[in-house]
Amino acid sequence: MRVAFVYARPREALSEEVARSEAPDTGLLGQNHLSAYGIEAEIRSSALRRRDHRDGLAHRVTWTARELAIPLELRRYDAICTALGPTLPLSSRAARGPRTLLFNMSLCQSLRRSGGAKRKLLAAGVRAADAVVCFAEAQRESLIELSGADPERIHTVWLGTDEKFLATDEPPPAGGPVLAVGRDVGRDYRTFAEAVSTIDAEIVLVASERNLKRVRLPSHVRLRLDVSAVELRTLYEQASCVVVPTRKEGYAYGADCSGQTVIVDAFAMGRPVVTSERSTLAGYVDNGRNGVIVPAEDPAALREAIAAILRDPELGRQLGAQGRRDVEERFTTSRMAESVAGILSARSVLAAPREARVGRPAFDDRVTDLGA
Image (cartoon, rainbow, N blue to C red; front, side):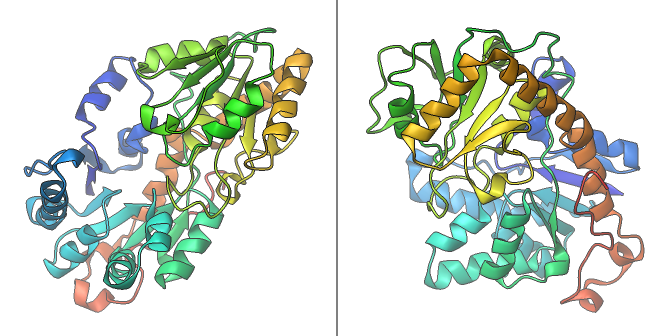
């Protein structure tokens, strides 16, 4: 089977960095491990170049045109795995192109804040996909409700991280910095700033400028805007704990599963995690076992959770060690690829004419748990 991976942003450079051990393979979503399951998976980008966001209308036009063109450009593949939607699944079905597997990054959020014709188009695109991969059961349930998609086509797969690149033999250092990481707009750095304002420790924040609009950081917070993968690994290694503050459930912006990537990366590095309560993080963070969960947008609760780990380095070591064990057992990119391969292994279904399959799942095997 030949499969093309088409990412929202080019990943060829990342693939080369992974090969040189300069970056984790997390962002490849298992593509580089599928050969172990008899699937030839290649990274492909459209010949159409999308314009920058600052170009407004030109950006939207080139984005849509790219989704229309990809199924024609990739006809020789059996399937396209992509986070692009919703136009691509619709155009591929209309053009009798390859089957499509969608990775659900923000489909639920997009559906919630859209209305009228745009919402109908988004929902139609989800229903046109032959399979959709969600990264939490709560995300899967929401997508089914919001789109009306066939539940048999919607799968839950654990997000994986690169446990080889993100690894250390050192436990969390006593007195190490408190580290917060994440550029998704679903992060809540206003609450974080208030929580750490009275904490007597080094605080490091890795974020983007858009995360910090109307946020006043305390003077002892060290902000990092541009950090390489190698530098970020060092920051994880130096940290006494990793904080993932997110907005309350129902906040309309950011990724559906904001915080997942940083959580599994921190687990891989054996660092205790403090995170806001969010249904799409359930199944990753187990309160008191591999991390600490606090109510979202509650500075006092967040402050106390961070302080508790700083006061008790042994607690941090125990939480971090369990997180590392959980990664090795459940949250690796190779195990993620195993689940994606199971969804893709359609046997006679991929060989059947598309007309005979309208309204039925395109892929045979529904793999919902990497631990299965």
